[in-house]
Image 1 (cartoon, helix red, strand yellow):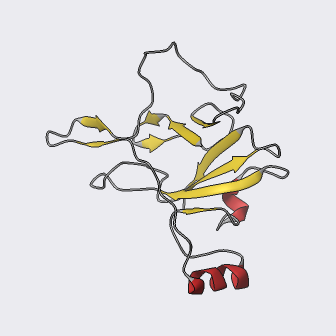
Image 2: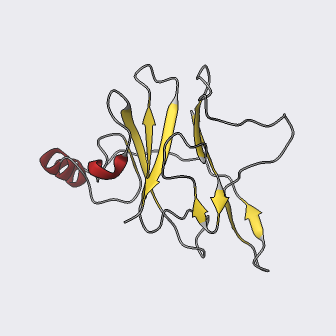
Length: 148
C-alpha cells in the first residue's frame, strides 16, 4: 500500500523535486520514512486531497483505487511504443521518461495526471503529470511532477 501526501501552495500540488519534502510517498506496511519527510504528531491534520465545496471552501476527500487489467489493444500499444496514451496508470514506464526526474535504480511505480478545480479532487501539476517511484528494495517511495 502506498500513501501519497502532497503540499498545496498557490494551486500547485506537491513539488518538482522528489526530495524537497513537498511530496511524500509512504510505503506500508514495513516501509521506511524518507529522511526529508516531516511527520507531525498523531492526531494532527496535515496535507489532504481536496475539492471545492458548494461555497468554494476546501473539502478533504479520500479515494481507494481499485485496479483492473489493461485492455489488450492498450497493452499492445504499450509493448510497441513503450508507453501508453493514458492519464493515470500503474507500472510499465513513465510516458515522458525525460521528465520523470528519478534515476535508476529506482523503479517507476505509477503516473497521475493533474485535474481541474471542478473534478472529484484537485491536483495541479501545471497541466503535466506526477510520477511515483519505488526504491530497489520497495520500502521507500519518491514522487515529483513535471509541467507539460
